[in-house]
Length: 189
Image 1 (cartoon, rainbow, N blue to C red):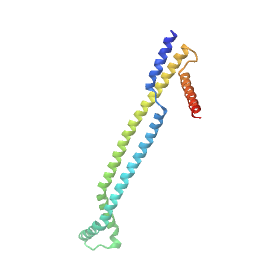
Image 2 (image 1 turned 60 degrees about the vertical axis):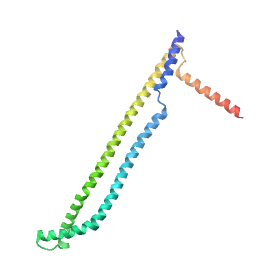
Image 3 (image 1 turned 45 degrees about the horizontal axis):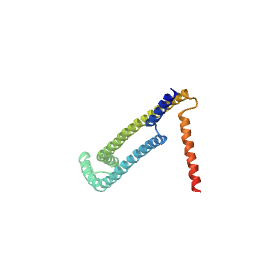
């Protein structure tokens, strides 16, 4: 009868290896989350840098080419609206406000694209993090299952033969490995 219990416990312990999670998996999983967060920051920074560079190109064109043509047209429209010529001391604030409004109107689609890209990056990384967390949940479940499984087998072995447990098996394996290492080092000398 005892032999059956020991055989059953041994079979359960051997089959439990399928559900065990090496500690390196949990460590790697944690590192993956750090990498995902770092990649999100890098991708967002790349989008910002690219859009900033393109805005710089637009601003160069806007102020060198479009600005003078806009100013010429604006002065004609100003004279038609106010019945007098533009006076820089009196009317600069109005010109400045109109030019800034024109700039903001022209730059808005570019900023909208930046926002859309940043939102898309954020959304996709949220999905990646959610998937990562789901895998983390599976790992935690396996760790709990493995711990519960080991505890149940340990209780069964202890009930059959006090002092007999999975830990004693692990200690015996560790001892055998150390003994073999000593023999190897003895052969090397």
